[in-house]
Image (cartoon, rainbow, N blue to C red):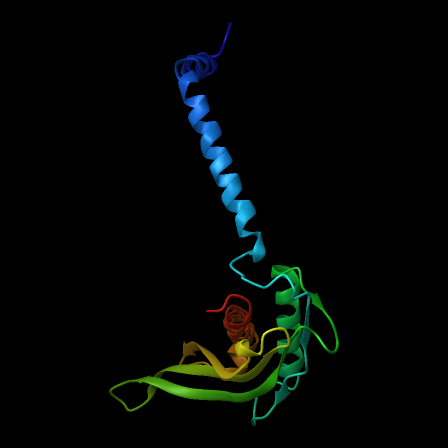
Length: 186
């Protein structure tokens, strides 16, 4: 005894045999579009020229007071890992086709959302990174730009209570912003 679902699907296939040539034509047209667009490859939103094969991430330095001592190392490793995970580029120690370097220029604790008692209702941790990007295959893509992101935490809590939770989230967003600017032309 055949399953009702299978019988319905077989009937649908028999009824729709005339659509098979349409599907075949659709497949051929899409395949030709994919083949024509092979000049630039794209994965997870990136648009990198095929002649770019390597990236170098020089050590970002801490150019501000405050912040964990390992902040530059953590940021460097997250940046390298992101390029390795989301591109086919090889991370090399020197002379990459693309080079990133810079400074962590801000690690700021700000009081935001004032209350009626002239106190902060929310505290904000903001990190700013100045990135310099060099594309050794296309110098028109070079730039120097600051990237900043923040996370808020309740007024009744200290930075040390929240730092280990907030810093990774902030760094992840800054890494994503830098990646989008360098690899996706955003």
